[in-house]
Length: 192
Image (tube, rainbow, N blue to C red; front, side, top):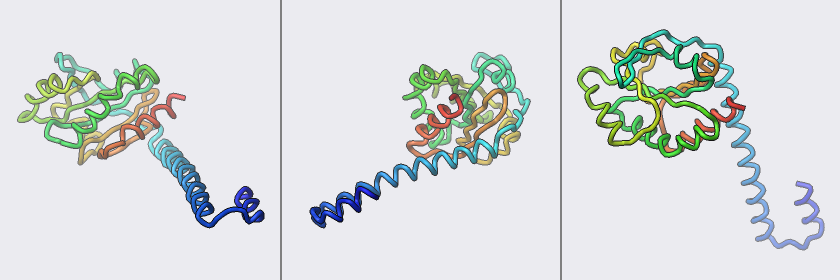
């Protein structure tokens, strides 16, 4: 603002130029404010969900073997888990968006992404054909009896969590275009 005051004292600036300058300064302030709010929200989410324990429910891999989130988290320091279903359009949009940037995420942060299908016995047969058709390269797991969904108390999908060092540090429900960028920012913040 000192810069603006100095210009005004000289009285060499036109009103139109002053308005352009103010709009420019406001956009800078807005970007700073957006970043501040984002950091505040991320910090709040991190504090709110830090230290939450993982449920010990059994999940199936596409090859038919059993695993749990505890087993997966013991191998990888930072993982993202997203509950989804073949009938859920926002879920498929989220997974498509993540698939587009997933290679970059892995090379830049080393994070692993697991998409856990909550499809029931009626729709589970659609999972493998959908994955093959979409070409998703992240791990797909099956929550055949919705045990994990119930353990998290999830009522709607997509439902995304980040697990760091075996503990849930972030939760998010729903998907809107661009959310994958927010998720990536959270991953970077947690990785650093």
